[in-house]
Length: 87
Length: 272
Ligand SMILES: Nc1ncnc2c1ncn2[C@@H]1O[C@H](COP(=O)(O)OP(=O)(O)OP(=O)(O)O)[C@@H](O)[C@H]1O
Ligand SMILES: [Mg+2]
Image (cartoon, rainbow over all chains, first blue to last red; front, side, top):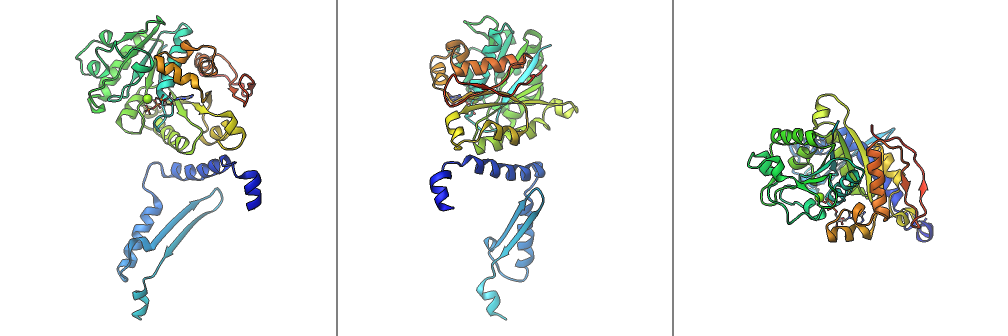
């Protein structure tokens, strides 16, 4: 792959641009200028956790990937050391 | 029937003003009565590209606010009789324009011209929405580059929601003008191809203008490229786009790597 990259495809960045745009715009068109769903989820999930555990806002990462067939919601919460040592 | 065209893009610096001047001149050269209107209040440039910067006395803001008559503000081109310019103000800001004031000016312009070409400022704020507000047709100027395509998509959304046509349930016609295209880089896969951009934005193609030094020299001397260097590829691209606007069925030439070696691909019937 890296050899192929090096010799044949290193300059062919246009297909990457096209694919990234297609994904992004499918998402943005769906929003219709409204708020970012991932941002709303991030805030609300953070609020629930913060009720029980002191946690930094950047420890909760919410990613939404909309595909043609399947969309995925990925939630990554990093627990602070102190929250676990208390038990 | 006169036609109001907005030349818009969202992203700045993609070639809206260049395209407004060139399409306006090309339409006028084809015998049409044309006025190009600069909506970039505070950052006017259309006067400069048309070589009229020293003839500006009154501007769009003066007319909208009733401080000058339309006839006093219009500047008749010295080279093409049927081409006029309505300049923007350099000292005011876009808040000096009101929706109904602009509507009145556009209505008046419709009386005397076949084509009213509105050069939109960049962005999606008031200046851009006012420029598109009363348009019958939008020319979406896009460079084959991710941020430009994304912003064009956004502008297409605004055209379909914020214009008078859209609000009254009519179809807002939109056509893509791909500018600063580099055939050699597209052939090497370094730049998105015409097909890529068309597939993503999904609006009909009005024309393709390659990256060209002739555009810079035309702007240096303040003369639209269709007048300054009519034989150049950029001038031909704009002239053909103008003919499509007039309803001629001219195939769009996709610029290929070697200049002069054009292949005619998409046959299409343009706007009626
Ligand atoms: N086909 C082209 N080839 C080479 N240079 C070009 C081409 N089209 C436009 N340019 C250059 O790009 C620059 C920006 O063009 P222009 O002012 O028309 O863009 P704009 O969209 O009106 O910008 P703004 O958003 O600031 O109003 C100018 O320097 C112009 O000469
Ligand atoms: Mg401009």
